[in-house]
Image (cartoon, rainbow, N blue to C red; front, side, top):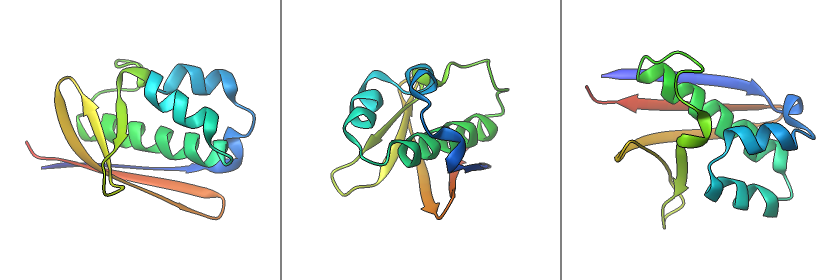
Length: 106
């Protein structure tokens, strides 16, 4: 089993429309555009994708963030979809921080 975790400072993501277009999948970008708390959403997705890359032992930049898709299930849980596989992810926000953790069964 491998675990990846990441924490980010949400205020870093205020007004980062160009960054959103680079790191969000097309489906995520549509959700982002509708969200009133854009920086919180973007920060959570960024943390989740960084955590995922750590868990699969890939360096930053080797996989484009927008190829990693985080989808909400009917019960509200997020899941990472990448390369035809589905991975569990937990994303949390508190105050100025977003954190995500991903577990990969090897």
